[in-house]
Image (tube, rainbow, N blue to C red; front, side, top):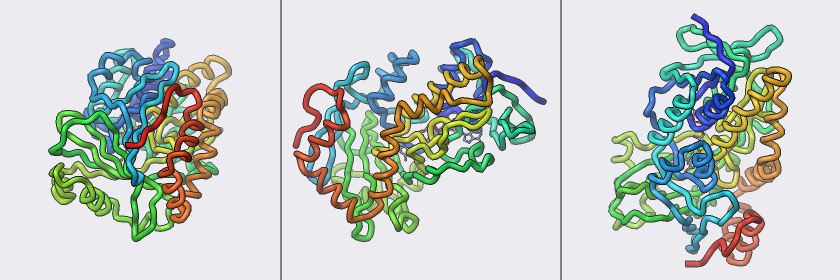
Length: 394
Ligand SMILES: Cc1cc2nc3c(=O)[nH]c(=O)nc-3n(C[C@H](O)[C@H](O)[C@H](O)COP(=O)(O)OP(=O)(O)OC[C@H]3O[C@@H](n4cnc5c(N)ncnc54)[C@H](O)[C@@H]3O)c2cc1C
């Protein structure tokens, strides 16, 4: 059996659903293929930045998002304790939210379906179909079924099978973090703060990464940590054991479960988090890459949901515009959009990714951030359009 669509989207996470939602606005025939059956879990910190919230509002989910647990600030332990407010920026809410990915991703996929996309769950893409000139013209599903499209959007996540099958040559390939998380009950009041712990040490060396404690509401916490793979010994780190050690540094009165208990209930999961545009350029003939398959994660923080939404929306729009004005051989319009959005920031991010892998530099970086005056300068340069004070010492 074969089917034909204007746009075939592999992956129904935030970037695939956003791309589908955007593409169907033009009346295009769009199919989203996901190997999972929703609701499905995705290892994540479950934190929505103000930017992520703004995209969810933009696509018509403001009322739903308002129901999620709200966070108004970030508390950083570096190791001194200070607080970062969500900066007031034009067109952006001054707060974030937390929500389980099981809920968020199901909601987004249903939203794309209601808007007109065909959604097929339990449909695993095994490889792209190429024409005689090497252009991607569709995908093969496990079992052999072929689905053809004028454009294919690879929104198939950090381990993108489409990207792997195409053996992409990209000079930025390999920039990544490894992150692990667990969700649990805790004996602590629900807070409105995303807590970040910068002091993470492995065998006496400062790691380029951080630990987090995010409140989910209802007495639940999402606790995890992540570190980038420029650290020389990253492969020697047992992420699960390391998370266990991190849990033991948190207040005993929270009565957190041990890592062994968490492992038993299967909530401990690690995943790759590619960042800094690992698939650059973000397209090849017939195919556009979005979200984690593009390596759209923000190098400075690892925030990936807002980037998945933004790159998905842009890919949905650019794919249709290119198909209407010349065809699927050239999606330069999408590369220009991504470059304008994050090109400069991600160039800087890749540079710091490499530097931070050196424990001495990572240690010096932590000391600098612990210094109030340096921090003030750094934050002002990061949030140029923000109004009001950005941080306060606690
Ligand atoms: C531990 C951890 C914590 C994180 N915390 C945060 C956070 O707090 N805030 C934040 O903003 N970001 C966070 N991130 C990053 C964020 O989770 C990702 O950037 C985001 O999920 C990317 O969305 P996506 O749609 O590109 O990919 P995904 O969400 O991974 O979706 C990809 C989809 O493709 C499907 N798929 C895969 N292979 C196939 C196939 N062969 N055929 C069909 N479908 C397929 C999958 O089933 C999945 O539904 C975290 C990441 C990790 C690992």
